[in-house]
Image 1 (cartoon, rainbow, N blue to C red):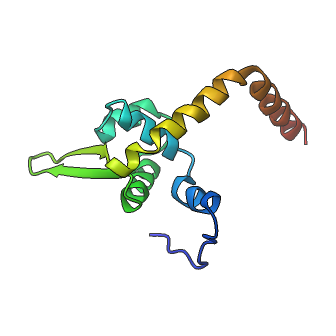
Image 2 (image 1 turned 30 degrees about the vertical axis):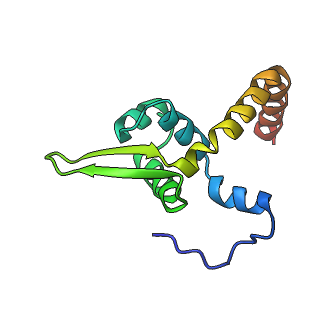
Length: 123
């Protein structure tokens, strides 16, 4: 497993939130767990572009940051479920606000993202 060699800069709230939420799928994982999709297979179906390995790594990091809890049921085959911790639930209004901002600015964001993709593809 990857071991960080440089200690992260944790001088302000933005550094802290970046450290906790950095990862392509973490915000979506938190949102889908909040919506009730608790099994790894359900999360994989909600985020089909992510590999199972990457989702597992990011779920483990969210667990290490006390945002989600993992329950492993002693059955065969093993059954695993994730849920938000009380601490993790405090992020939901923030994620919701970010989503609302994205919805309100969808047209502009889509244009600038596609423009950049076209420029990158031309080079």
